Amino acid sequence: MRQRHNVYVIELDPRVLGEAKFVRANGHYQPGKPCVYVGMTFLDPDLRFDQHKAGIMSNRFAFKYGQRLMYEVFEALNPMPYGDAQYMEVDLGIRLREQGWGVWQA
Image (cartoon, rainbow, N blue to C red; front, side, top):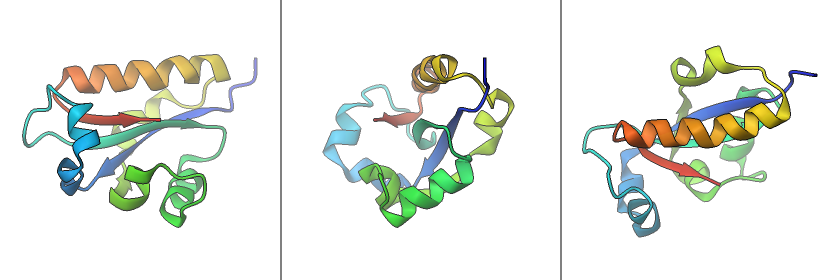
């Protein structure tokens, strides 16, 4: 099985907490914890981040509030097969939310 997919985590500017939709999705957010966008891609995460910031197939929050890739959160997980990446994207978001992070996933 080809291992060519990646999960990635983009740190979002805390101003995203001014977005009602983001706040509603993060009822257990703990002030001071990071706000992030979690995604998956078959591209290099750096390229995918650049696409978000350029508005290419971008998530609204990643485009407007994305600051940097948080390699420390995802680098050891990659690469992986497509099915594993699908699962890991959701699982990682859940685990980060359980730690009090603000998380958005498309």
